[in-house]
Amino acid sequence: MWSKVSRLNEGQLLEFADNGFLVVPDVLAAGEVDALIGEAEKLYTTDSPGRTFESDGQTVRAVHGCHQTSGRYAGIVADARLLVPARQIVGDDVYVHQSKINAKRAISGDVWPWHQDFTFWNRADGMPEPRVVNVAVLLDEATEHNGPLLFIPGSHRAESAETVFSGKAGEKPEQDSWRQHLAAELEYTVSRETVELLSREKGIVPALGGAGSLIFFDSRIVHGSGSNMTPYDRRMAIFTYNSVDNIPVEVADPRPEFLASRDHAPLRVPR
Image (cartoon, rainbow, N blue to C red):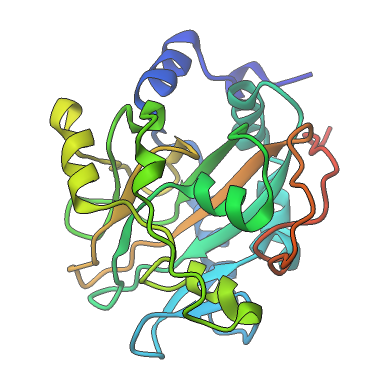
């Protein structure tokens, strides 16, 4: 039985459908966030193929596949406060297709260019449809100055957005092509002209909130983030919940499992 406390109400679901994202404040308690931060810091210092760095080659940018390597993060993806709303939005049983903890380190945390997530999952992983939702957990307060997520409301419904993506495939050896999906210069980005066009109606909105807040966002919404100009980190874990009826088809050059999970078993809230 789903927890009623964990369910999104009708107004929240309508807001998500209209804007393509939803911020739910103060969901996790301070102690829970501290535990997740402690685990994140361990993962940041652990050598793994899923760990990436900023352009300086020293500052950790993100760690991918955290729910596959950390018991604490494996537990949080099945937490009713994340899983139940994800099932509501997707409308089906779900599994985690991808997970990561963005570091966005103080002063040195770099930008994420304007992009749409579904383009990567569709083209690189063979995900058929955008029956998928991202759930972000703020591990630090997201302010206007520390590189918060920026969304263009309603852009998840823009039919023309995908046509402006410019791939950089072929610039790197085929076996290393997935690495470009983790770098500051993403393989698929949205052009300045399209960002300007899409933002004319509803502008650009930062997703702000305190540590422990959740951000739900559509896989097609145009989003990015600026650099962190503050002396404080802006850490955030992101879990991608995909429908069990939307499992990726086989592709010629599959990405590593820490980017595209092969475990498609539906998640259940522990009793």
